[in-house]
Length: 280
Ligand code: FDP
Image (cartoon, rainbow, N blue to C red; front, side, top):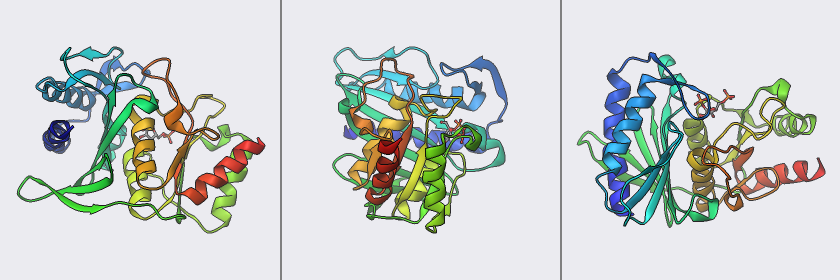
């Protein structure tokens, strides 16, 4: 596991350079989910594959940018599911973006996830590693990641990040979100899953939601590359992560690119979601 974490550090330094100096043009291709790929997505994906292919511990990698898994070392123990550059459409407006990695063993269900790492590329480069604990690291002047602190969520937070097109929300979901705002929560939503969830995590708590909508009945966010890794981070930090009713890490995708409605937050806010969804 340690060699994988080290490798993600190397990957992050390279992605930082790509983000600083590459153009934000689109390619002529779409990825497995139908999003038009940016040249940046493709570049980051390629450098991650190159880096992981050097590791004897990695059996297989599955990228959000590719339809099929890529077999690396048959004797390796781990399968890595990753989103090379989440929120990449925000690069041209210079907002924060991130990379997400789920480190699985045996399969790619929630229960197979053994560790999760994400990296935020904002004014600074920060890496969060969830293994036994959830730890924050920051890239320093010396080009090394230094430990900053351990992260723990409070029971209740102040921020609300509601995803999805509002006119496509179910009425009970709208009531839930409106009720949270009425109780004084502040809106925090940049449209980048990594910085939005990072903000809630570091500010102590709140709720990030991406529900089922009339246009996307199974939500938008992808289980293997986005949802499971963040569910793991939030649970390890003392919060919860559910699909409305069920624990996200109990889900079993039929296909690596499957999506799910998802709610991540402090215990208090997730209990509120559970009550609203149980009544629906
Ligand atoms: P994007 O489509 O820009 O890659 O992964 C999908 C994602 O971004 C998340 O980062 C983000 O939270 C979400 O989509 C934003 O979706 P909406 O624009 O529908 O809110």
